[in-house]
Image 1 (tube, rainbow, N blue to C red):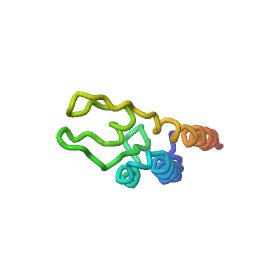
Image 2 (image 1 turned 90 degrees about the horizontal axis):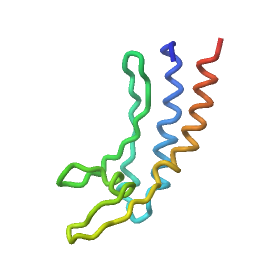
Image 3 (image 1 turned 45 degrees about the vertical axis):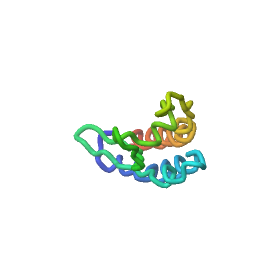
Image 4 (image 1 turned 60 degrees about the horizontal axis):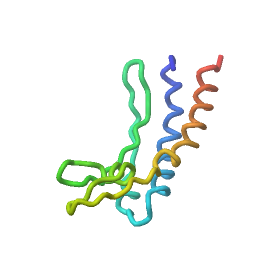
Amino acid sequence: MQRREQFKVLHKYGPMGVAALAQATPIDEAQTANSWYYQIVDKPGYFGIHWLNSNIEDPGRIPVAVLIQYGHATRNGGIVQGRDYINPALRPIFDQMAADMWREVTKP
């Protein structure tokens, strides 16, 4: 995007992503579901959205959302299988965002 005002369309998608991620987060992880938030990144030549989760597991400062997504080892040597819930939740938003961004950058 070349014009600064074009990036404002990103603000529409932050809350949409947060809602989709909260709804898709496994129900037994209510704290994680309620910990989603977003940031709009505005750097020279780059605009973007980061969806983040503030539910952090210590030690290691690992977001619980990442542990759910990719799985993890347990203290007693077991393994918890990951569940791909982030990608399916955000896919429709990415598709809509791409269509809207294309429309925005091709405006006369």
